[in-house]
Structures are given as structure tokens and as C-alpha cells.
Amino acid sequence: MERKNIFKKIGFTVLTIIVLLIVMILTSQHVYILARVEPQEVGVRFRGGRIYEVVGPGVYSDIALFADLKRVSSEAVSFSVEDPEVITRDRQRVGLRVSGDVFRPGVGQSAQIQELWPAYRGLYLSDDALRIRVSDLALQAMKSCVGDRSFDENVIGASRDELRSCIDENVDLLASGLGLVVRNVTVPNVILSADVQASLDAITKSRLDTELAQQDAIKAKQQSAADQAREEGAVRVQLARQQEEVRQKTILSDLERQRLEAQRAVIEAEKSNNLLAAKKDLEINEIQAQAALSAARAQLAAEIIKAGLYADNSAYAYLQALITNASALNATDKLIFVPEGTSPTIVVPGAGILPTVETGVSAPVSE
Image (cartoon, rainbow, N blue to C red; front, side):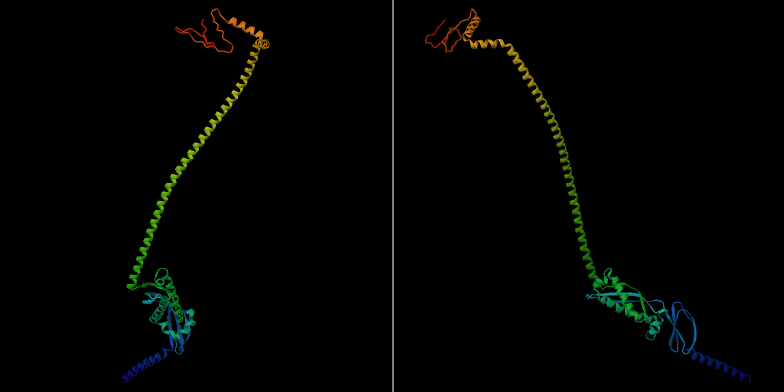
């Protein structure tokens, strides 16, 4: 009897467990208790197979028909995609690697989650599915942006920033239709084939050679300009020296001219003084001559009177002449008488010569 009771208890316990398991299985689709939503998650609550609420971080419980809670991560999902061959506008091949982050909609976009959940539930719940989809979108954006640009515009310098911006805008635009937001897009690497690299190296070398030649030309031009400036400086120094010499000579010439003008002024003053003195002397001499003439006239007054008497009385003048001649003769004087109107020729006597006088008569007269 006791054994029978034991078997009954065991059977009841097993049956209870089975019932509880069946109840749990049946009610697990309708109940969740103390379900936690983490800070980096968004909770999507379901009732009757439909979304009735999108909630933020917290702890939630619910008992309802087909009650459920799905958690959507709001963390960034990183992606990186590479395309080794993308054709540019000028038919060049270039490879790119694009990286970035994609974000699912948050609590603030609850209406968008409810609208897009049926279509993109897998993208919201699976990081791998989301990464694959965004990588495809990035490849599409890469082809579009690279194809619209030439090789140089995709590869060289600041053009890569423009390419990155283009890919960022295109990926974000494509992802926005899925309720996703793409941020932090970068183009960390541009992949070039060996042929393209060789061509770029040749172009770079040619450009460097050209720039080197230009630098050499500029250097030669600058050296020439420096030499010319140095020569011009030497010429200017020489010209300045010559101009200074001319200026000094001009100053000396002016000083010499001033000295000569001063000397001339002195000479002219001396001449003027001498002329004045000569005039004064002449006036003095004239006065003295007048005085001497007056004195002479005074002294000769008696003689003048005699001359007037002689002029008026020729017989008296002749008598006086005879008297004068007679008084002038000495006892030893000899006289020679010649006809009037003739000139005697006197021959000085010498040895054996007698003095003779030419009288114009053929026979000489001797004494």
C-alpha cells in the first residue's frame, strides 16, 4: 500500500512537471518578465505580433497575447569595403578602400522603426546583415563618384577630399531609405595597379625634372640678375665717383672764377684808381703847364715886345742882327761870303788838303 502511494506521488509530481512545462511552453510566447534594455539599445515591444511601443533603456515586463520584446543596438556598426578596379571618367582604373560607421534609428525615430520594421527587421537585429548591406551601398557610391571624375580628380591632392565627400553623401543618401545613418566615411587608401604606378612614377619624375630645370633657369636668371645688379652697382659707384669729381671740379672752377672775378674787380678798381690818378695828374700838369706858360709869357714879355718891334721895323731888326753877329765873332773867326741863295760846301782839311768852299764859280777861291 505504501509502495502504491509512493508511485502515486511520483506520478503526480511528474505529471505536475509535465503540465508546468506545457504551460511554460504555451505561455512563453505571451509573457516576458524583467526584460532589460541596455543603454546602447532600443527596445521594440510587441503585442499580438505587432509593434505597439518603442522604448529606451530600462527593465520591462508584459503579459499579453504573443507579447515580445526585441532589442535593437544603437551602437555604431563599422564597415570597410574595397574595390580594386573602378573605372574613371577618362577610362583609367583605380582601386579604393572606403570605411565608415552606420547607425540604426533610435528612440527618437520610433515612427520610422515601426514603418520600416517589416521590411528591414533583419538589418536592425543583425550586425553582419547590416554590414553586408552597407558595404554594397558603399561600392555603389564608389563607382558613381569615381566614374564622374577623371583619374587626377580622384587621386591627386585635395581631390581625394572631394571624392570622400561625394562617397559620404551618396552612401548616406542610399542608406537613408533603410532608416540608417552613415557617418565618418573615409577613403584611407587608393589602390593603383603596377602599370598605373609606373606611369605615375614616370609622370612624377618628368614633372620633377621639369621643375628642376625651371629651378635651374630661375637660379641662372637670379644669378644673372645678381651679376647685372653688381655690375650696375659698380657702374653707379663709378658714375657717382665721376659725378663727385665733376662736382668738385665745378666747385673749384666756381671758386677759381670767383677768385678771378675778385682779382679782376681789384684790377679794375686799381685801374679806375690809376685812371683817376692819371686824370688828376693830367689836370695838375695842365694847370702847371698853364702856370708855366703864364710864367714863360711873363718872362718873355720883353722879348715878345722886341719881336713885335722887329716884325714891325725890318731895318731895325737887320741892324740888331748885324750887331748880334758882330758881337758873336771872335778875332780868330773866319768868314766865307757866298752869293745869296747858295749853300756852301765845307771840306775839312787834311794832310795835303786845303780847305775849299764850293761857290758855284768854276775857279776855286783859296785863302
